[in-house]
Image 1: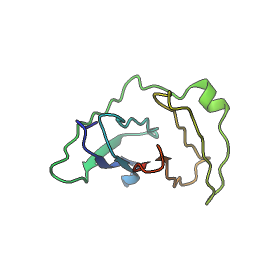
Image 2: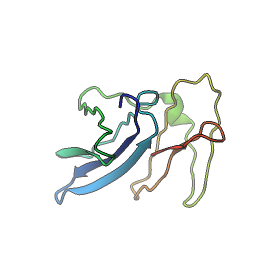
Image 3: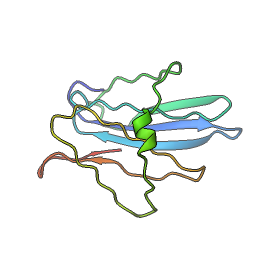
Image 4: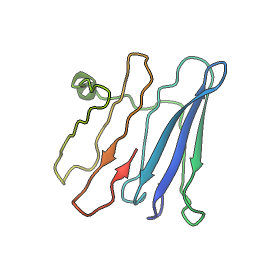
Length: 129
């Protein structure tokens, strides 16, 4: 989270015998209003999570990694998942009164390459994961 300025970060999970990184790029226009949270599955064996602030020097952010008692996806989220083929776009509108949403991305073991955008109004910057 930030105290108001943009949050621009690279998050990497290093795992496996050769420390192959799984990468996530996060951009949030206002980290105080919309803090970013993620649950990353850690495959067997030792793992390391790296968080890199790639924003400007004037835009610091606070980060924390917890490795015990992490929330699991809800049963509703797991049961309502849909397949989205490569190159396809799926939108999920929700009311303005919603405080937060849960997004689950999962594959059958193949590489995952996805872009998540939060759009709010016609003239606002989109939040990108």
